[in-house]
Length: 496
Image (tube, rainbow, N blue to C red; front, side, top):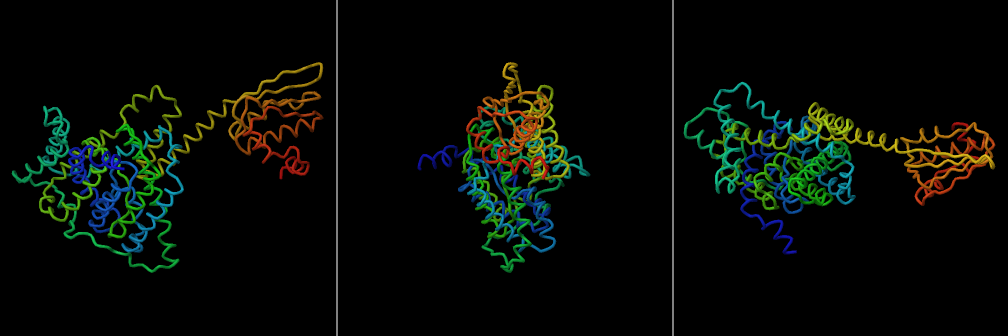
């Protein structure tokens, strides 16, 4: 137990603390912006980010991953807040947490293994594009000072690590934020700052039970929103965990992460915050800044609260150009540039899945919808590909008038039509032998095709023998096959 705690909390103290501070600074404008998107007071997003980050540090399944209020979740709250108000949003946040905990116990985190690498790549690329696009309002209709500060920030971020000793000791995004803030305050440059984003809270969050009637009508209102929030939150969290796994060469417990996200959202709802989930951009900032353990996530949440409540006068002075530079660095680092080079050597189907995922996510700003489209396309391409790995060979014994068919490969809904087309039902034979030694039947469509084939041969007067079924195939054929049931045969032939 102590070794586990030491590894997750104490193995990288300096790196985790510094990375957590950088993440906390990057969380502030995003939490405020997401609150504005959802139509609530900025403190709702800030309290949520603090609460979710601190709780997930203890109960999450992926050390070093940052969870807080996110844009993808905020978009789903707009209608609920507009029609019913903040109290119903808090109630929906609590229900979201409960649904996510249930998903964890049902081990739904394992469903991530059905998400192909091309979908993950498309998701990451789309997110990088969205992160960059989100910075454009801060770079349009502004003075040249903003462009100069942003360029200077990017220069610090990418060049500071080359300095001997100190370059590796302090995260360059933190140096960027501090340096540009000092320059702005000393010179007195009139540019947009964090203080211009909205009013910051000046008190600690308090326990707040949603003031809604506990009735079926309330449940009817909040359940659709809570279900959507739960799905999107878990999907983005699982995708983020996969990416952080790759960046750190470590593994995560996805089902534990589902439960952890649920607990964090319940905590956020009870402290007046909105629902959130894992954040790819901030998680990458954390990893790139040296954060690896749970301490980095805890520091990000705790330092965020300390800053907005006790250091708000200093916090307001941070130029948005500095945070824009950090987020542009995140978008550049997030985008999978190798995926562009790989377009020429990857299969066309893989490229289509990746590009379709990017297009849908960027067009709709809905990460869940983009992943859904990508998974469906990947499934269709896979089914089509596997469906072609099925062949039927045959040989004829003239002496006994016996035709033997040897089926090789996978028989399921995508290859069932090809399976039936391989047989000659008009050939004059006494016996037909179907050898399934090298075949596997997967579903009821495959079993139905076997039924039709056997019945057609019998209708032509041939005796049919099916041999060589493996245990799995025999089980599904015995359970769903009807070619030995006269009553069912009549129904099948009758088409009803």
